[in-house]
Image 1 (cartoon, rainbow, N blue to C red):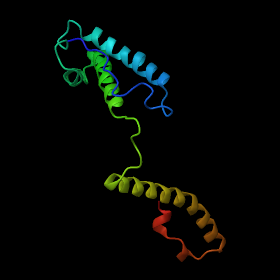
Image 2: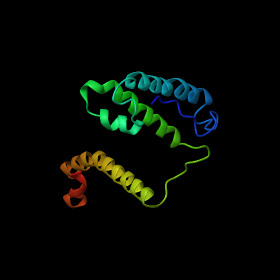
Image 3: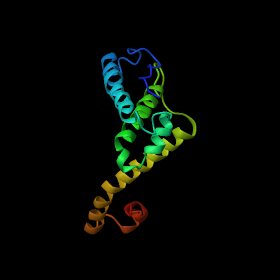
Image 4: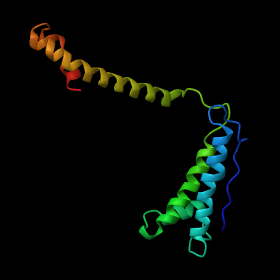
Length: 143
């Protein structure tokens, strides 16, 4: 079964100014289309020809002699998913559990970075006698 380049779920200029119509046209109309064309070329006359895109990706994954089939079919799937993951006027900040997880991870990363930067300074201050050992939380400095 020959595949065709799927239509975008929105107008080419719908994501401007974040992503220009020119960028969309190039990425969809040339780049994604090349994967579709190559996919069709590599599956023509093979066992993959009558499979769905998802079946081709699954069947060719990890097959050393099928890298071209896998790479192109997976990129067709990936780009189609990409286009359908975006929408004009969508987005915003995450909410709920995902927002809490992002905030917690960001806080933990910031705390680790601060500890990494601060511990050498605390150590030098302790060695010089400026600080007493009880002021340095060893769990922070073990980072």
